[in-house]
Length: 81
Image (spheres, rainbow, N blue to C red):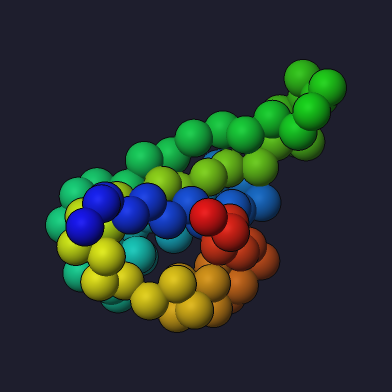
């Protein structure tokens, strides 16, 4: 089975930081999630950047529907694979 990577898209850095901490507690994620700034195409202004929380799921045990609902609590979503 190949490793699974879940990408949660969040509106800003502070929210992404909060989600990264909460996802480890709520879902028992072992590996620390990565935060990645995702500037929208053609935009240099940090105000127009989304933040990604990348969650490694080597055993494919996390439920994508639950992750999407969790991200929605923070005005975000789970990026489709």
